[in-house]
Amino acid sequence: MTVLIDFRGRSVHLRPKGRKYPLLIEAIIEAGGTAKTSSITALAAILAERGYKVLALDLDAQCNASMVFGWHHLDPGQKTIYDVILGEARLHDAIVPARIQVGSEEVENPDDPDGEPITVPIWEAIENLDIIPSSPLLKNADVDLTVKQSRFNWFQNEMDEYEGDHDVILIDMRASYGRLPASTLVAFEDEDIVLPAIMAGTKGNIALGKLQAELDEIREEFRRGRAFPARPNIGYLLLCGVPTGGNKRGNDERLAVDEVVEGEYGHLLLPQVRYSDQAQAIYRDECPMPILAPSSHQSKDYNEVATALGFVKREKSEGDPDRETAAVAVA
Ligand SMILES: Nc1ncnc2c1ncn2[C@@H]1O[C@H](COP(=O)(O)OP(=O)(O)O)[C@@H](O)[C@H]1O
Ligand SMILES: [Mg+2]
Image 1 (tube, rainbow, N blue to C red):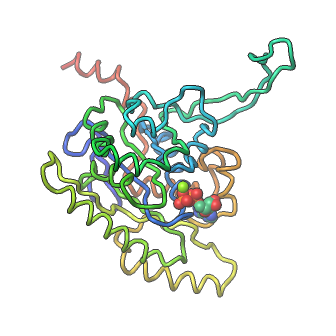
Image 2 (tube, rainbow, N blue to C red):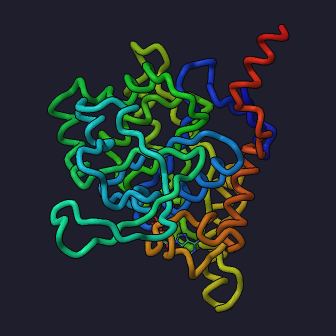
């Protein structure tokens, strides 16, 4: 069982308290455009590349993370996280590999075999990285979770019955609170990581205060009558889009704002993610930044973040079932 040691020396287990479901990391804060999706998709790609088996959950009706992981268009009949929430699919039925387009080819049009061939993408799966795509219908989830009250436990139930081998589940949450985020945060214990992202220079301390209040409310509401009381904690803070130079006056103002954040939340602050005018390309090219541009500022900085969280590169054999069998045989 792997234990991560973070930059503060705290240990984080990939199976907290020996439970069956993986460590949970959720990007959440009630503010749009604060690099939640950029951060989750970048970290997912880096952890996968370092040998951790990652499951990404897109919990935003905008489906941005699905797009970055190659599922802008779903296959007919493909399940989404919304089907899981409604109880119409199990978590493991909705999992697909994250993928990138590596080319395209012309094939016969199945609807018109005698007509012009059609161009279809050629995909390559990203090793160690799975995703459950979202759906625009997810916008209805709060109503569903309120009307069918038993569905509120969808995430906790799926976690309690989880039997997969992912090391970590990374959740890209929408930009507003309510029943949907609460239904995921109830499964969080002390070691699981609520991971707000804020943009440099944007008075993030106000949004962070509101997040803390929201988490306190969830802890209070789901304290009793549970095997594990809900314990969502702000684990770390991502400060993104940090200026690298340029406009002096603009930078001074940003720094003044960010000092307030650092004063209040400095102990939670991960290595900062620098501003990049290439950041938008993950949506244009539908590819996470560390794969799209591995030597960009952003990719380097997210690599630092992954290391600070304790996700050091794994030896290839560590997760190798053959090796475990061999160890058992020797014993
Ligand atoms: N490090 C960065 N530097 C500059 N722009 C960034 C950076 N990270 C994200 N962005 C941009 O900020 C916007 C919001 O990012 P996104 O990850 O979609 O946020 P969210 O998921 O919180 O809405 C996007 O246009 C994105 O390209
Ligand atoms: Mg987003």
